[in-house]
Image (cartoon, rainbow, N blue to C red; front, side):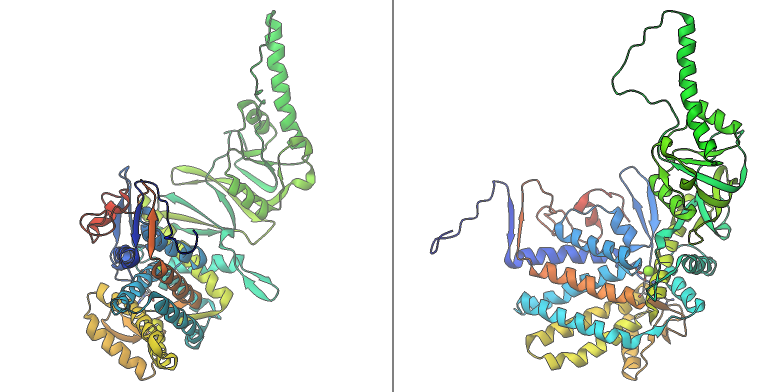
Length: 555
Ligand code: ADP
Ligand code: MG
């Protein structure tokens, strides 16, 4: 584009374009709709959502990350909101609803400033200053995490609101033990990789039958009934190739003239298979975990040699087994040697519910544990899995950082108060943005109160008054309908959860505010004409279907 000339943007016919205030308004509208969709689930008194997918499968949950994962959104701003939840989930495992609700609120209050003609750049600057300040203040609220009791409280807080009945105490205990088992010291720091905790679920029994196993559980039975049910001092071979005769890529014709030739041919195949098993036996393995198939002939020989074998194991499980038992995964059987074998004290098949599962316990590496989740129905088992996912992650994060903060909105209100004290020192129009940021933080306690059916205005007034008096840990007691000390109520969360929520919410809100031009190619489903009756989002929850169409029966 040369100077003086009007820049020409060549857009294909059918491209939709939304510019300036319009683009912003629509993006904000969409982001708010996403926040509203999960808002009612926040906190222990939050409601559940029933999600029905296009195949009619039902998920009942209160987990923000799950809800957003299941609903199928199309508008780019909506996708950004879903990303916030996802990153919150992968980084810290909890606080997904909070981060989305906070993002929505940051945008909502920003709109009030936009209406007063405050430039988006000023707002985003103010928000960034506010977020930085908030993260600076956060540690002042921190309490030390130095014993299992507090870790358990953190797990319990993460599980409140999940449909796991009266089993939170029991599950928290398991979560803390599991995390402790896999925690490692590295350069003087505690590191926890929760992926080392393998979670298996099996419908049946009750939640209290959920157990922590020292070792690895495979949802697989041994391949042959005549194999031993239990092998002690297991020498384990991890094989990544099938025990079967390889089919050639090209189809070959074999000319057989005499009946003896058929027999010879079959004998040769059997011989090949026998040699494979022979090799395994030779190096001293008495357990074979195979990622591929094990054919009948191989099963027969393995059973004959007293080898316990499992086939078609997932790659990720093979890797876990390698880590736990110290075995090397071998692709070419010719290369298999005794050095490649792993060790476990016991490998055995146990009947769980209606199925047989394989338990590998007393592994070489003690830092590998599994949790076997039990529960009456599939829905229960799934919700326990989600609850444990959150609990394991928060306990891990809290143990790594060694610091936690009070929940129930206490932290958000304290941060808001401190930010309002800080705002005048910045001055100008950024000051307004910082004050709005403070207002937005209060959405958390306000929503907790609303979801508990309390008078939110009254609660907020009292809550702020407590903080003015210096009660940093005062929060919403949703069960008693009053203000209480959250540490006293054992409502406590890892500091990293709050930090991440502030960071990611600020990031997405500022990103959305900076967009003043949406150019969508023809056919790209950016939510039709955006919110409003004529677009894909008739507003409110009914609109969710319109945004993606994937969840017609939602709520
Ligand atoms: P998220 O996906 O954001 O974790 P939750 O539905 O788990 O959403 O709700 C988390 C919020 O509920 C946090 O602000 C937390 O402090 C609060 N909370 C959890 N347990 C309690 C409780 N017993 N009393 C008050 N607030 C609680
Ligand atoms: Mg939570």
